[in-house]
Image 1 (cartoon, rainbow, N blue to C red):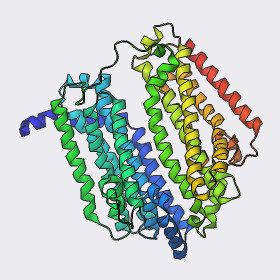
Image 2 (tube, rainbow, N blue to C red):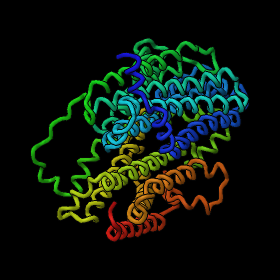
Image 3 (cartoon, rainbow, N blue to C red):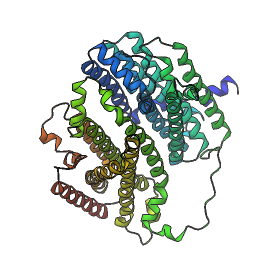
Image 4 (cartoon, one colour):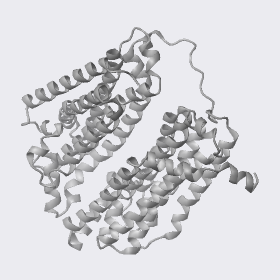
Length: 540
């Protein structure tokens, strides 16, 4: 391919990049804000909770020696505030940056192609590869902005400037590596959903490889697996320690190589097709798919399986870390109080387990909302019309997704309780007692999740054009109140807005049956109101 042809194929990239930024003008700042605030807030918290070198060394000894925590957070090479921050949030900052990258790149490539928008764009003076390059450019700029803001924020907190720059650069570079992964995934498959699933599966594999390698650190064996994962490279860069700047070349080379491969694949495939052929479906659908509930299950079972796998891995490792949580907190009375307030228990282990169940409930609420909002995607994509043209009415159509959401939430809560109970119960020989009580606490979260799901249903029925923003805003507000409300000393009137404030804690007690009944009645009323509004409004 000559230089002139290459230049022609990229014509219009700047305009498409500006359009992409405009379309994501709310999404991108939100992702950047969350990542930067989470990391800088962690550094600030460590400074407050562990002001002495002895306390930090005790924390480093406990955290670095706990295999479950190494699986979750990675290697810990020192006890400074910067090194503790890197250990606690380095890998997870990269994960959040990668998730942002996945949604940005796939949205502006495969999703636009699937929806027919790229066909309209291609009819004007825009090069064949301009949409792909614009998507990569947008994601790259977002990752670089995260890196710059992280460097500035950590430096402003008084951490060494070289370490802050190394941390920001490592997060940005590892995020860039996955721009290439997303670009290749968008060329391999024919749907945006499959492309996102493929990219997230690669992220999951990278997490597991890094986790297994980090757990094996110091014992030989397969510790080299961490070098195969982009998530492991941030630990090898060693921000705030003896920085290894040369490791930054690995994610940059991977990003360049995968981007080049994506352009090569894009040049060789047909429009609206993937490199991998679609699997031919059955000539006729199974009889059981005539039911809207079965159809919702068929469409969402892959998503539920992925969530369940993530829950199993995360809560098994988190439960295993509970045995050493007391020594991990060391002499920090403030941190013990934070866990106790979050969990609502007097004992620190119960507080930690209760906090895990709360996090499981909050994540399950996000899952439920994501499933229900598929109704809006089907409506705007024209997929609802063939279904509603049959004897299936709007209420039954929506009820199928509501049922799938509730069933999925129940599965995820059960998975969180089971794996947490096994992770903590096996080392302490208390599986028979831990699993049942954790199951009870987990299903105690269900009424609160149902209220959030009902709010999403009401938004879809009454405010379809704003339902996505409204539903996710509610989820975000509830997460903020539950994680930071008490730490910010917010009034109980404000905290009571969250339905999770009214569910029982790990060992029972108030809130009791009356609170749960009110939550269930509220969820039922909002759901009925949403279904009635759906019946009366026009479809897009």
